[in-house]
Amino acid sequence: MKIFLDTASREVIKKWSVTGLIDGVTTNPSLLVKEDGEPKKVLTDICAMISGPVSFEVVEKDPDAVYKQAREIAACAPNVVVKIPCLQEYLPVIHRLSCEGIALNITLVFTALQALMMAKLGVAYISPFVGRWDDLGHEGVALLQELVTIKKHYGFSTQILAASLRSPLHWKQAALVGVDVVTIPPAVIEQGIKHPLTDKGVALFDADWKKAGRTQLL
Ligand code: E4P
Image (tube, rainbow, N blue to C red; front, top):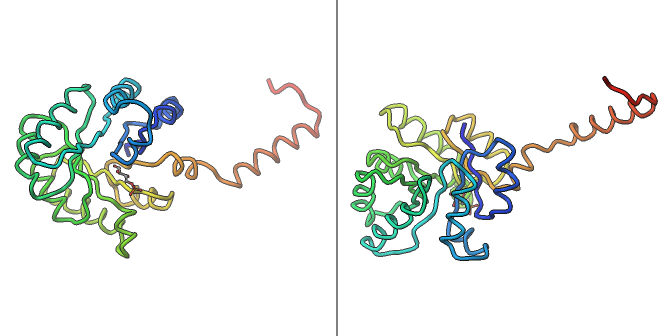
């Protein structure tokens, strides 16, 4: 499983990049506005810190402007992936960019049919939003399962990038259904690695070691 970090914070990316866990980064306009500096600088900084794919979303609305902006974003660094929302009016743009070899991440995917259409267009990634689908009383993880099944049926190369994962349980469920990639907020990675019994065990071993008065291990 590939793990992307769901943040635009360069400080946080720097912290996690040395762990060997992070294969890429996803950002969105809401994450980007929390950062200091020009968006282009934030993007190029992140792309220089991470060798894997870095998703950066268009903010234009008119399809022609989306096409132009997508090309501009793609030109910023070799590892940029352009995020475009899954909207009908962008189908020709997505098709064109995809044919031109621009790596795309189609975002805000909430149904199997949306995902199927985007996979047919040959995009690099589709991002089903698990948490936001849960928020409306649906089962986000069931959506992931549908996408994995459809991908298997037709052998699509598009990677399923599970997004809007809000808890370690979401992450585990995404792993169990076999998505290609997860994008995880930094706080959820921390929740995923921390366990009270691990902390307790370390404290216990340490106490026994000190009680025995040993100083040398090797
Ligand atoms: C990543 O690509 C998404 O933009 C992000 O995971 C959305 O998460 P949220 O629904 O918690 O804002």
